[in-house]
Image (cartoon, rainbow, N blue to C red; front, side, top):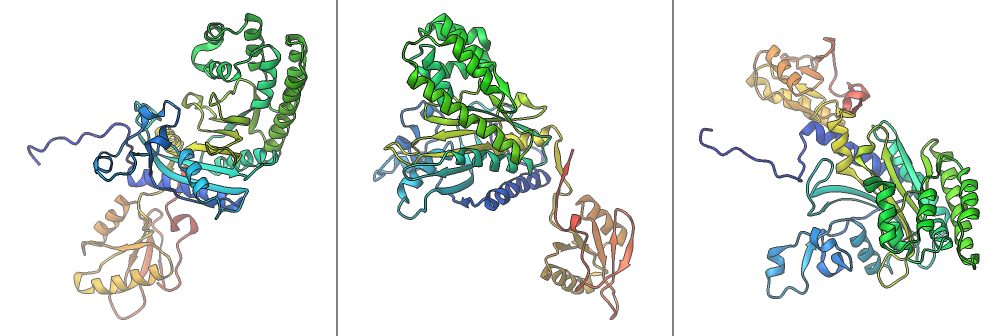
Length: 452
């Protein structure tokens, strides 16, 4: 209409077309199916948490969307904000419902989260995340670190993607090595190494030097970060490097951590690749700078789209809740980020944007009720359909179906005979059909995904 202001999209809040939404929905459904097949129970947590819990001791406060109306109420017990990930609400949920849960508790959760960061390609302010975790009460067997990675590798393999590579490391291994070369602030050094892709080896070395790390120690951990392999052969390279770079006198504790970490990492790489061949790579530069990781750490990259960064990350932690206890291991997919790349790069598209497999034509308005009866008989057997909005010439009704990518048009018998004929408007084939027996081909029954 003349004079109406042009609608401007809100940056960081994605909205998909119906066809793109089909891709998103099927990605989510595929993930759910794999998670359920491996015994993970679905949960959904409330979208708000207290600001105190959301922010904690981190710098996350600047990313939280607060709820002005609720927080302005005089009887508000606590200031609230929208959750910016699914880990914080899951920690609260586990603590709150611990007496009702059976441990180890296997959970998956796919929900929207909100994060106040600068929007850019693949980075949104509102987006879907998909998490899986296995949490124990007092302890958690190390083999579950392998299982979580296998489940996530299978989940990603179920999607229309060109392939993924899961880069894995072990924090015990890294901590043992770092201590062995004389580094006390392991967490601080890890945060620097985590920036390798952004600032390069020279930038990391300079940052480590500013933190008081000796030049020889910095060189040693940068050399460690160069080691990678798709099998257990990396163990020998680490042991050789250890033998030539260890500087502390009492190495027993550090060496024990190193050896335990190497054994765990070998088991992880070999276990994942046995289940999903060619997926896992031991990559000693993967640091996951967050302090709470204590065992395996994972970062997953989309082949040919490494510029997107990690599409699925996580690791082992000793305590899910702040008070201690509940060790676990988990991984998280940035679903909206992944779908944005799938759509933008043409990796996948929907076969159609509407659920209808059939358009039931209307001979004339006097017989619209007969068309509606046929449609209901098809729906009773699970066949999605709709009735033509007008009783135009059949050619125009076919054009209407074609515009909506509906593959079949049903032409009712205007007399007292059978149910009429159904036409595949793509091939032109038209055959007599019974509304209580006819089935569309499986590929046409529901909208699907076409891989590039």
